[in-house]
Amino acid sequence: MTDTARIVRADFVVDEEEEDVDLGRLAAAGSRVWGRVQVRGAGLEDTGIFLRFAMVDAIPFQTASNVTVDRRTGAFEVTDVAPGIYEVLVGRTNQNLVVESMNAQSQDVMRNGLEVLGETFLDIVLTAESGALRGTLIDANGEPVVNGRIVVLPPATERGPMLRFPTAETDFAGRFDIGGIPVGEYTVVGISSDALPFLPSSSMIYYDPEFIEAYEPFGERISIDSAGRSMMIRAVD
Image (tube, rainbow, N blue to C red; front, side):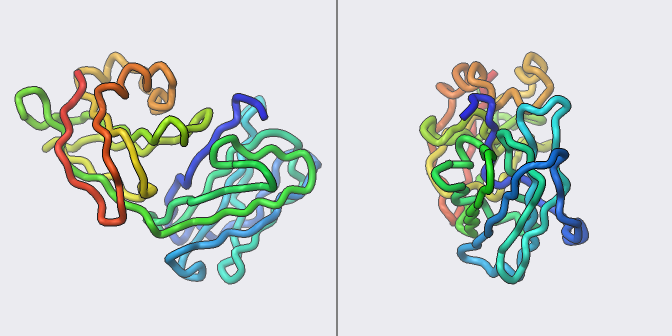
């Protein structure tokens, strides 16, 4: 596996009208990727789900159009997939669903990406067992921090080469609300609006190891369960 593989848990929510799309194809003759999506704690027929595959090493960056998941069986198929490492994104109309596991034979796709070398079966499990984090970001004087940033870091053992972390920007009262977080242990970091101009504008900075090393020690360790969590967070300046 290459160290540039990218991973996600489940990471975009769509409107119902976006679901009706044709099967996507990646731009080179190759292998077939097929499989199934299962949903725990919710009806598959009530949830619009589709997949996107993006080749990590392609120049220019190469992305398939949406791959529809059958609402009755959870089956999907995409053909003519060129060999390579792919980021797999799971779109869903139910924002409370998160990816529990994503495996292809012996590959842990959530952590290391999907390596396609031939016929590949991909098994994806979604779960409705997710929580939310909401609260207020405050400064050293207890005042709300407007336009601050909340970053939710999973344990180091669960991070991959480029995991997309839950993030949110605070509103005019310093409040934030992040839903669809997988149940588990996290470190939550609040960053003041004064510090943000000194960070690169791209949200990808939050996944950079140097950023994590600098800010994680100032975070607070928390547990997220299906009941959710409310808290005040002290901002890092």
